Length: 146
Image (tube, rainbow, N blue to C red; front, top):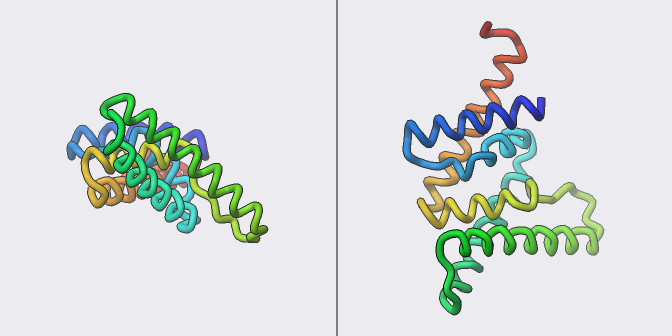
């Protein structure tokens, strides 16, 4: 089912962008989010890390020249470091809950799109696209559609 969600997620992401002109967080994000729709804490942590990444990179861009691909690369690196720090803190504190984000790069992809098109538009489109992905895969697996 993971493979199906990811492939269908890419298709839905492209179609969503072509129809609405709004990116659902990046081409692979809806598939990853759809994988974890039953674990909202992971989605929440991922969004939180994406917002923190966006804030840190915007502050950093006040002191350095960041734009285009360079800014995107810094967002991915910052999200990677934040995820690693967050995971390290959780492990160090021995918190028994499964409080982790989705992937290391997904928060960076979300931060890029939040920076480009706004936080509300990105989060709303991501949730809509992820639900479409999950629903589509469930319908295909149940054999409702031929």
